[in-house]
Length: 379
Image 1 (cartoon, rainbow, N blue to C red):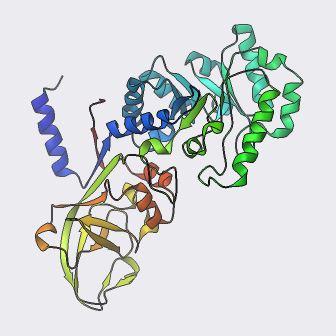
Image 2: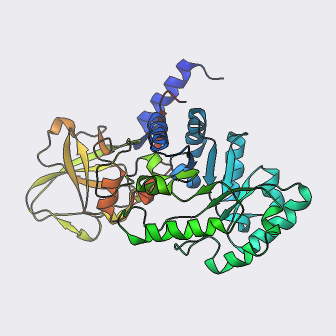
Image 3: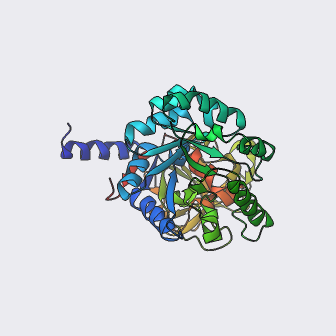
């Protein structure tokens, strides 16, 4: 095993070679999980959604940190994600949101994974497998208005009319998913709540779950027995348009490669899409869309240098971004110095606004070319 001194030297060399450094604060992730847990009513528990490699931040680091903090239930999208997570967390409850389409029932059972059954056909398939084997557990997803995954409303009476189907295995959870939870006043929220309650009355008693990150903030009526925290764990604001209650998890900085003077009338970047209106200085940094910095934020948004904004100018290319650093202290804008792209005051939602997208896409896009450094006492 490498010595601590050798690890320190290796990290120092990696930092020296890196074009961009992404620091991920595991303590902040855990603090966000605890904050959400503390908001829950009547004994509800907070699960963690760690699909898509924990929203791009590294499931192999994030999930164990949450488990050490007390999280017991985890959701992923695919069977392969579930099997990878099982190798990290031998005793956790792990559910596969995309259901039996991802693999044969025996593969789920062998890995101790719970399929989320999304239609009557999947319920029948799991029943046929599970009943003669002692009733391996599964979850049931009801569609109450999102019309994405989940059992269509027209199939629910058929399921209720065949109660033996659900008695052939342990029903670990009945869940649904809100379509408009980030808009508290949207009438869909109460409509889905009502549909979910009515559906539960037709089915055997089992723990229930309706709310994900934003739904937690709709109040106790939406909490049921379990909530499924996802993007909020990673710092995305669950309350768009209001102050973000979550801690920022990420700090992303990129290295300045070159600084140049550009005269009035000269162009910057592909397509000559930006033309200087006055003489200025341009810094080129080692970050681009191959690193997950979305091309849609070309000509929009900014980095931060010495506490001052440095606007993105020109088109974002595969490996490079150009910044207008006119007026920023030249001593702070030198090749080899770093600019902040994400920090505590400029989070993923700010970057998403500039890219005309959502924080989820910003998180999951961040590429593996960035050197990743995990911080926090939870490791």
